[in-house]
Image (spheres, rainbow, N blue to C red):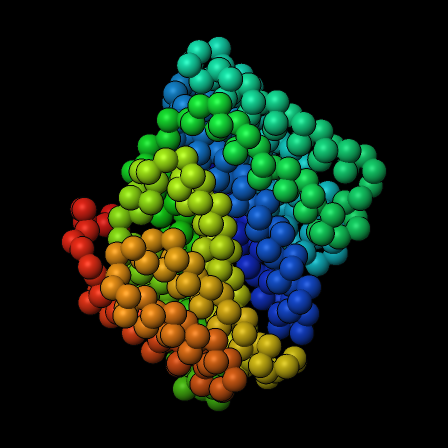
Length: 364
């Protein structure tokens, strides 16, 4: 949890910068840079989490290595704003290098102390070393001031390392622990949106001119976030990890969609608040999409990953239809109300459309 709380700083900076760019009418730039920066944040977090669930010895050496990685995460946080606004990813890359280089001796330690996983660990160490060399080359060529897009090829190499290494012998991840860790990070991301709703309430107390509208945004935002929490924890997530390497990979990689959408919801709520208080400085349709799109993407992502197998066919169709209605709400001024209604309806469908009893009560 302490490690996660360091990452919430980076997520908060990314979400607030996305809000500023969206509010200024630069939604395209903001969305692209947010997705790329968030990919780096998510990957650094996930690779640490997956390693920790298998090989966390909790001794002094492991703790010191973790603290160093937390320092790298803080450097990543410091580099979020210049990366998203100026295309300068220098600090982002430096922080990322700190985190990933520390992972190499950890994997080498696994190779020495766990002979049965030696080939897997050496593959991880070699793969990480090669990719970090590419990051260093990027720094040396001065490409970090061109734009966030230059990191895409190197990120693609990063994503290829686990499938390559795990083919030797899958690491002994713990399904319940992995699901718990992903759930905790989801809560952190949803907490950003709760903060945005609280900001709307505070603004309403001092702005009688827009009091009614701000209260509507605050209440609707709270309903949407509560529904997001409800559906994510409606089914035990560990069941999606228990049937082999392929499904575990899908679980981990697909969470990028869920995490990125959850992180962007707070920016959308803040855009709705800013539009009420200061007026629209960009296309109103685009501004409403800043909330509508991530909310719909989150519900679709959780449905596809975890809910589909547990629901009747009619319930699956209803959830997709409700997400489509969410998308059309961007064309209406009262889109935030429609979002809240659809989100609440999805909760009802999930609770009433279950085809089988859950294996155990979901951890909340």
